Image (cartoon, rainbow, N blue to C red; front, top):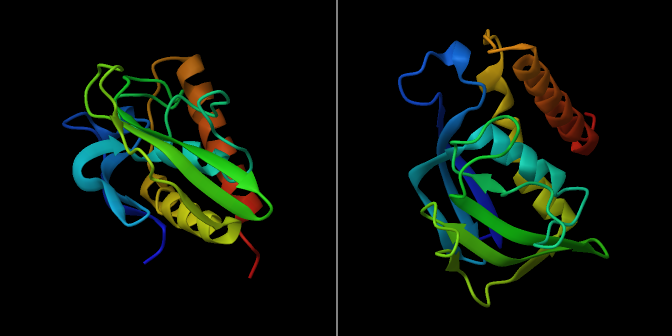
Length: 180
């Protein structure tokens, strides 16, 4: 068993909203860190926005003092701007000498930011290659879900945000995918 496993169990559009208006995918995730189940796949989270947040951690540290996004796993009530309600997960990702350390794991199951579940003492180290593989496999499952989808936007700013989101997403995936 790997010390870090993130599995996309299901991906869909939010509720009864027509797919063309939903700019983010949502679904169920199973997350295991250090052999401990952090997410068991029962709750829905924001899949596409979480994937981009995780892709950002391939190149940069993510800590409480130096956030790359509000959360690493978003609840799904956010937007392509990667802001939303406080429900979700966050942890520190630190890069050092070809290794990644994951620690300071917090999960918010309600909007009350003072009621986070702390996974005290849970810390794992893995190679950057192992971490990159897990994140890329997760992120690459998001892309086909959006292929061929026509989206309708509220305004020009909405469209621009969506386009920037996907430009960054694809750039980050391509930067870490080895050519065949």
